[in-house]
Length: 179
Ligand code: SF4
View 1 (cartoon, rainbow, N blue to C red):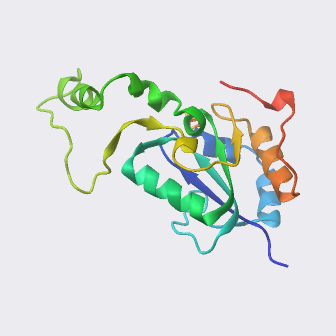
View 2: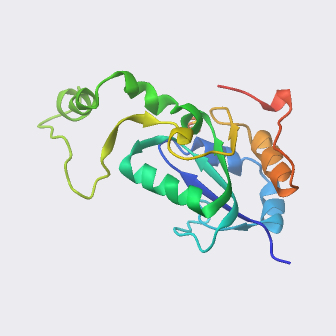
View 3: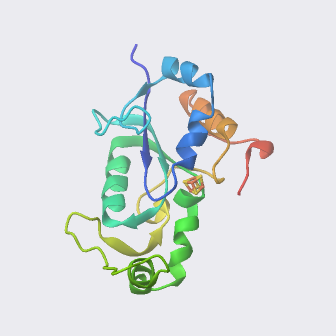
């Protein structure tokens, strides 16, 4: 019988949520027995081969490329789980949401204390910044949310096991954290 499939994706965040996933330590061996990984930075697989059972995404959307990839995840994942503050609320990157984008770019690339002869990047290959950082659920439907910055490895493990067993990923109080 074929194994359930998992994909993971990273958008605007710090990769800390993926690091937390790796923090399940030796359970990663168990996980590789239980599931087959499709697209994920963990195996460096760039494309989906199929529609997967579980998608896990970290980070919000700060540019047009994030939006495109998040929509691709939604299309290719039967169940989509958002993990971490950046995916759930925009997190630290969303601190820029109170400042107009133009001012952010000017501060970063023209007026910043370490800038010499600055220029705002405008290469057509660079993703276009959005007016603000959007949490994942404002872009696509998210089935489950796991808070934390990052969520603990135990919380992620409990959620994955629950989903693989066909249960709702309801986490015990001690596994929930919001910082
Ligand atoms: S929620 Fe925290 S750990 Fe996760 S990507 Fe955002 S800043 Fe990093």
